[in-house]
Length: 119
Image 1 (cartoon, rainbow, N blue to C red):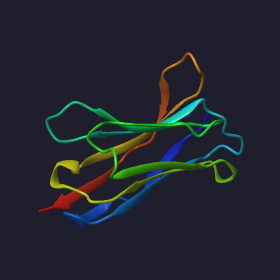
Image 2: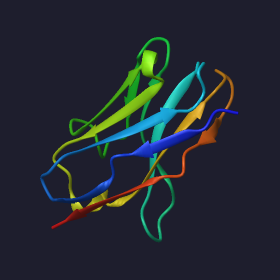
Image 3: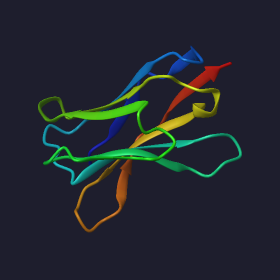
């Protein structure tokens, strides 16, 4: 069973940047799509961005368009989330997840990494 491990979270001031990484443990990793989600205290988990593994097609939540960039390194089985112009409202635990089949759901989840943006 593949495992996903996030890293790169931390504390940053508003306007700053962070890059999150999501590494898959399996030697062979061929999901249909990998996404980033986040959950702030007292709020529902929300979609942030996704990338289709084979084509590289990306999708973003409106709240992060123009500030966040998702990318993947197929050879390293790793997905990145570059976050620029961070705002206090971006504070949350960020999770990566893999949708292993085209008609499936996000069925493999990482443990999450905390991102805190101070004002």
